[in-house]
Image (spheres, rainbow, N blue to C red):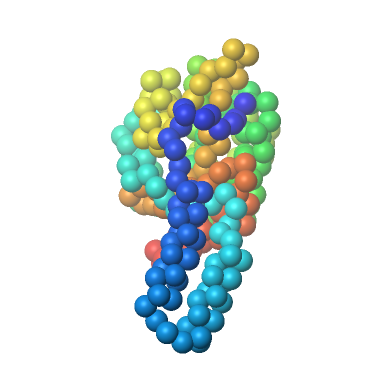
Length: 230
């Protein structure tokens, strides 16, 4: 099962950050009101506050928080059994998610979102950016299982890799993303359904709650990042 684990993954400042930004606008307005005079200024501050109340960021999408290199020189295998290092993917943006093939539901939904991203970005996929789905159940997901999963999910696009490695390597990679996995008594693996856009240097540009974010938001962000590089 893919779910959020209180206290097991790093505290992400998304809601706190947004609340503080909004609260900061009101505090700044109050300070300016004390120092200024005139009804026109009061009217402008009220309009600004109202605009802030109605502003909404895209659901499930957040600015990068983690500054670590998330494409280290770790050896992995793709769905065809080919060995590669994550560092070899540097040079292009990379869209990364974490799944496992026996996941009872949430991973399938996430993979379908990724498949729609791949379809909408088909001309650029593989040529200008890479997609990577990494198993968080390497004890059971080898290249064969990942290849079968990719076929079943219609995820055979060029430029989309499904990766596995030793459990130690996967845990090390999750730590780089400031995530972790927990094996449940029923054999399922609890983890944060995170999706990440990494820049060509392997560092986060955007991060998402995979259960909430829309395909259009991810596609729009990737297009902006690719546009900035062209």
